[in-house]
Length: 423
Image 1: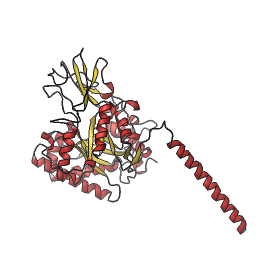
Image 2: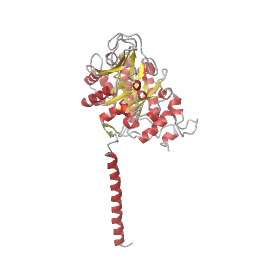
Image 3: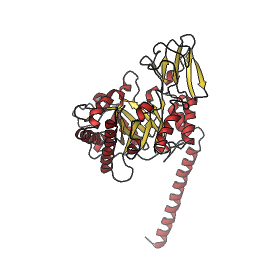
Image 4: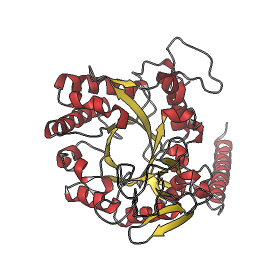
């Protein structure tokens, strides 16, 4: 080939490449400028954290495919249990978590491959690289199993080793500890030791960039948070999920808000200010929002006595947010405490919950105070319609979400399909 011919071919290749680049760039510009597309920027921004419950796949029929992955940064999988005798972390529903076949899955009971929710979520992570999967260990039901474990070094060691293995087996991006609650100073200090040992193990597993995350479900009532060694705990945590809900319930004598933004003695603002006063950086505090309402029966409204809990979507006393307000109820706004609720004069039922307006006010509060983001208990209660979804509307209000990549490589998983990346 002559030099002249080579030069002509090189120039031709350059112009063809330029044309291809121009076309691709134009396509991208057209896509991103389409006003009908709702865009959330992924960067080191706000966290939008949703709990997915493994029991939700049954009666509630809330499946992995229903998760609004595009609008979440972290998915907290609820719950793993703790063996009270040994401290070993274990799955709470093997069928739901690792065995249930998905669409197109071959039947294979050899145990060599992962199925269930956790395989489907791995697929979700592959398609949404910003979505981090965190196993939540404990919860209200399993928390009593923490009491002996946290004060016993041998049981703590078993907990840590088994938790790390679960992370590798099930393709997790971190661990969440939901211990409700330490009952004395010894247990509170044992909690610190547990977090320290977990952080050490997680860092040893992935010492480079993008470390595995460690979080907790943090109490928001004075009787439960004042016992904690917050400053020591904070050294080891990626962020705190504040349980800023359940401020009121059947245990009270009068109806009240369950997740008001302002006011005393309990509110979102009170809890946030308390943790900040103990040295926790604002951007590590993630504000919890309920996707359910607490109901009270036989009452004259807000601040009045009641007789028992009201109705519910799946159990008495609790409605899904998507079922509220009930058809015979009127929705109200409390401007002093920044809270919403509904009341029915015919059934005399009072329900306290967050509507979209309150959720967006909380989003503005989070932004103006440079907090870490929002958290939701739990996803099955939200509207599937995006225009009525609290999760989606808060994400859009934030505008800028944490887009740090998840992990996809797990060479030490006991499951062949996870080791191979489902290839």
